[in-house]
Length: 278
Image 1 (cartoon, one colour):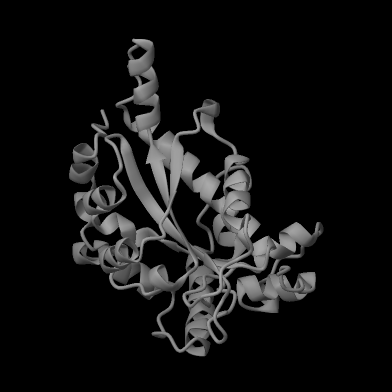
Image 2 (spheres, rainbow, N blue to C red):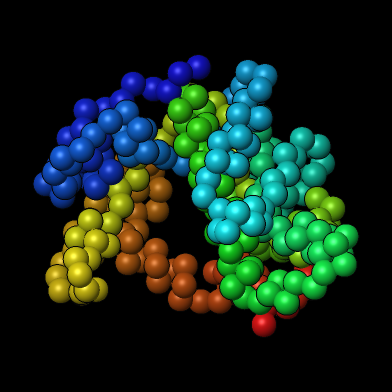
């Protein structure tokens, strides 16, 4: 199934920023940019699978992403077993779309392959246990996954990331048989959106809040945030979600440790998974 028709540039920008008045003037435009601006998270999927070869195409796209020093410090697990998916959904606070989507991928920050290489070569990797190397693996996995998302959406598929797999990373590792030095950083649902679950493009912060010229600046930030709060609250009302603006969401998500759903013990979990992070 092809990707949905692209919106005209001004309409696409207005959708992404919440109002035509807030949208920047785009001097450059093409179908790829239109596809990127049309992204939205989808949490309801039809059961029918994509055509054969889709998974392999997504992984090929993922492997075409940039990778630091060509270390390729990531792996991906395609999870098909219903019991495993159900267990992962429970870890992710009951997100049912993990079980219903036709393709569910778990993206791994994977340094275990490099450790095995060193052992086979009788070599020492002094840089392996450091925080920088772990960050390389996480960034590699994220870049690869985003390439897969763009590829999926170009084929008319929908996606949503599942960061809540980090709630209990040791359990996820056990379910997937991960070796030491490998950690699931997030999941990804892929499939055709169920009717009524297609969703709407969610507004983002104004460009003036994130784009700095020459030096970082905070002038006008309060007014920009207030405007974005209104745009996001209006979006939430249309989607029949809790009508909180961005300010309220940030305070709710980061204001109390319990909102981290167990991820406040990430350093301990990483050590248990074979990442000492010196």
